[in-house]
Length: 262
Image (tube, rainbow, N blue to C red; front, side):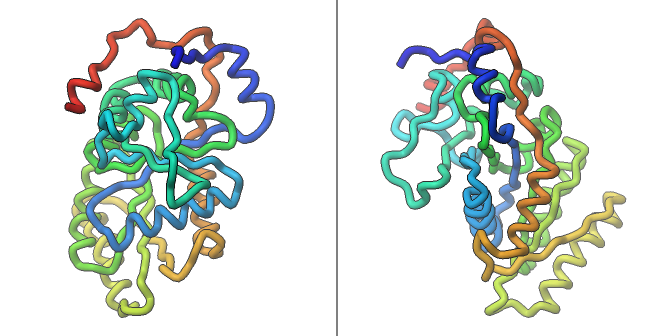
């Protein structure tokens, strides 16, 4: 496919109507009971608001067989999967692509995402990655990550470590949400877990951390989920058009994704 390029005309077309692209982020710290289920709820809620949602999954590496952000950055487009469980949003592997952009300026990151048609009007990019991968992204873009936790004791430890890394390496306190399986969880125990996280953050890091709670029973139309989505959108980073000719940074050295993917 011919190399696509951002231009002033394309920028005007994107800015002519619709909502500007938004950047969200979510921390992966190994809590399977909270992270992915909450992500699906959020993506469904965003799709119901008529956003085109792309999850850039930094926990998965791009490969020649499974294209993702790395290929999009090289070729200017991200092929949509031929079949998917969710047709209103997509998930793309993004480990190498995220790493390649991590040390760039905010302006360059925006330009690159626009060039590969990921940051277009009425779209949301959700970066899902570990605290280590997210920290430089947070520092470059100012995005405030969402950190989902469950009522498990193991989630308390991994949530605290992720929160600590983001604070020490990026100077940002994530928005913490506790997702509760109300059919099996003792609510008093769940509240004790979330209080412990707040207490640890206050005692060891000097931070004030509020934990928001959401039931697992809610879908994308649930009022608590919708309220969370509204807050995330209000606090999200806007990926504004760069208004430049050509692809900014196109002259810089091309990353050899193929070598890393083999």
